[in-house]
Length: 337
Image (cartoon, rainbow, N blue to C red; front, side, top):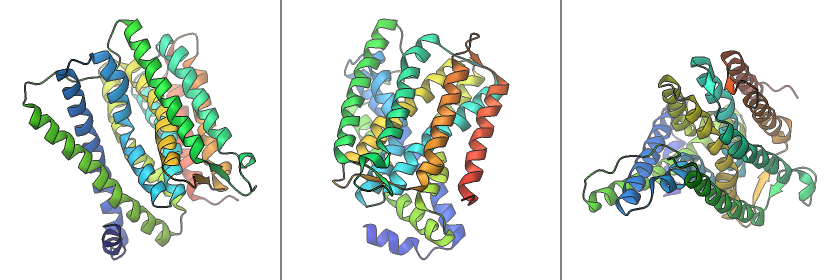
């Protein structure tokens, strides 16, 4: 199937490639939405508490587009695309999305979220930056996130999910947005779940060769396109959620959603992508110049403003996050070194 898709994609003009990417990023997001909705509905139908559903299925579902693309890219031998998508999503989530949300209206910061998940967010980003270092590889020209590291990330993911469930139960409220149970036949819910899975997988399998072809034609590395165009597209669910939450006066939900997404981009997305390939994920030298420093800078600045005494991220701080993202975006396409 991959050969057929690749053969069709390489014949498309540039406009056609951009159109395919736009269409299938949309279907990828819709498939993930459908998958999450039906999984939640089934879980509630079977008597699983909503707090547990919100802390596990919903949070994992929002990063499913990134995970699917990165895993398939790793399996197909495209580590630039796999890693670039994960790191780019962290940068887009924290810089672009939270920055834009704060510019729409001040974001209230829940102290519990910052002290718990916020601390894990910073630790996850630092851990990713450390394992990317060439020091852990045989050579000094690039780093490698080995398969055992990916498996370790998945073990940490299980621990994070367990902690999230404990925190959800101890808080006494539902953490995360979940759906009300609908009175529909089980077969209908399962059918929609299967359709959602099919949309996610099919969209990802078409997106990967399209991005490869676009990168070759314009002479831009796959990692750069993955960290910008693809990462933005796969972060659209978080963008819509954040903007909607702020407009309805629930800015703390937007902050919590992004913090959780950043953690899962490291443990779930990078972990899964590295774990499925025996060669691991090679970290290109260019990532040490821009992608990794930008990730640390933007997450570090977010952590700084989120810990202020007023427990709010104001419009000025949102503008700085927003501008940091666009400086990062500009530097991706301007060869300064």
